[in-house]
Image (cartoon, rainbow, N blue to C red; front, side, top):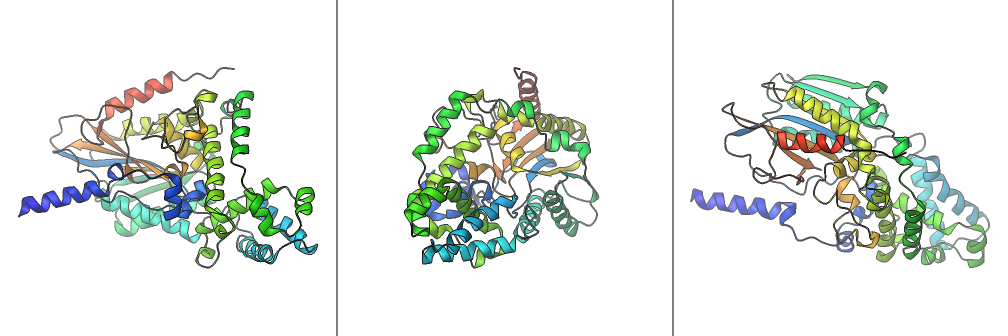
Length: 434
């Protein structure tokens, strides 16, 4: 009987793990969950993998090193709300909007008013996401947080990141009041918490890649029908409206509604067909791949924007893994750090070099799987209970077990020395030409 129960649990674990699920195309995924099309505005969904692979016999988790993005937020720039609002408002004053266009303007005004004086700030949903992530971290690895252990938490100096950190820490403290928590947000740490590498950014675009991307965008420019739905005068649209720009801002607004409380009553996704949603996402996906991913057409250099962060993660792990009960190192920042870090670590498909931008989806490079709101990377360290043996590490991407470009000891478990040697060597070999 016990054997049958064990087999059933093992099968359940396999069936619920991402690696066992049949891969769906983005089109299929968007049909089931349209919010994924929002790219970096996709609200954190929680882990797909409910049951983690048990630790190898004789091993126990004892330290966590983490970097996570802030939770769901309002859009950041003034133009993110004002651009669509001003274009539609002017057209309405001139009698150029359809009845449907007038209703879209009404909804845009609701979104703009909700975000007034709150641009870029954490939403209620964003706070909830980080409380949930922290709670699951505790529940999955209670050994790490047992007793009066140390939690060292740092945030970038941006308020949405600080509040994300504080919500996570409050959740941990509510579960275990004995935790000794240090938390900080300082420019002192920005050299690795959110390094702005201007020299590296200069290597993103070259004339050949710019042409490739512009041609790609032209193939996926799909907004003529949207303009016809909004405006009653095609000549007005042709001469007075930047259709591409308006479509971009409307789709951004549509994508981010899921992060706000208006998600319960307002949508803009009805403005777009399934094909238009897919094309908007394709352009975003390719843009993120070029700007932050391992795009071979610009030398696959952009993931090295997080070389300081990865170096710091390794350094602090070395300082902690020799302790008997080191606790956790938690860091809170931005998607422009999580995405390239995932690519630098070559997690799953993140480090794949793909020349044809059209093939990104079929090759499995999907931005919404890497960096939704609240996205995070967790390194879970395991020690042998008998004090002899290798330290092992497992990496979670958005709380799901991820593969590394290393030989595993078993399942998703790798020797820390192998991890350390591989990535220190990779960082040492990085060179940026003038």
